[in-house]
View 1 (cartoon, rainbow, N blue to C red):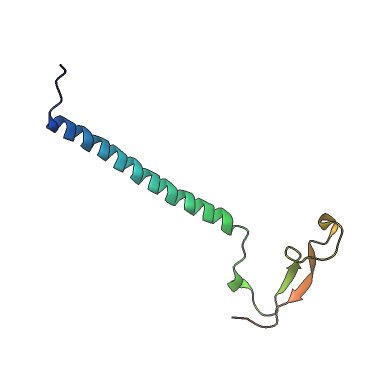
View 2: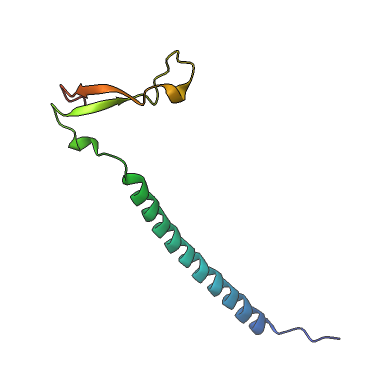
Length: 90
């Protein structure tokens, strides 16, 4: 018959596995934080802060969510015209 390892050896192995798992989990949390920061940076590159817009600024009306009776969307205009900001809506 094979001799069973004593409980102290088993506890030592379990602690070692637990320590390795905890260390890997901490590392993955740091990687997730770094990934979130990088994703936010990329997302914010093309976004304009609405606080930068002031009264009398000109902005384009984008045709993104405007649906007209055009046969093909790709032949439609991308932007309609410039509009001037007249008041602040909050």
